[in-house]
Image (cartoon, helix red, strand yellow):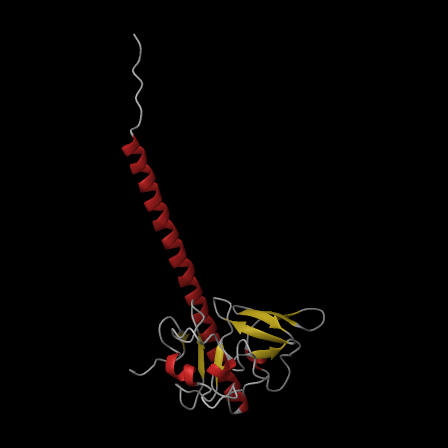
Length: 202
């Protein structure tokens, strides 16, 4: 007696493919969410570490550090630009207030525990979770008598302003235009930005 072969119908195959597609989509969505959330937490931690270092700096020297370096076409001046050969012993160095700073044989900074950094010329920049420099503005626009710290978040913009990607004329005291800082004041701290301040109701 011959055995009758059974086959999957086209509808059944398409149903299985659709289910697999849905599960894959959900999995990718969850993975992307977790990855983005990790970057948010990393950025919040970096900002907290910077706040602590800046407060210790003020306690020792009487004021917060001024901005250094010339305005940068890509990221502006209002970011942490620490000399690669900066030393923990240098008077006025913010590096002195971080734990576990590592140096190479040429006394160049190669890492700061818990902080993401990148070298740019003779300086190192402190980065957020998405690889953009952390913004530092002193005196603060939103934190009066203190300083503003923040990140543009996942979209790397000030708020949702597509025209501002940390441009030198978007951050106070960095550009030559009369309206320098306008985009910063108008947009920073909105949407997915991560900052050490909360905006008042606009």
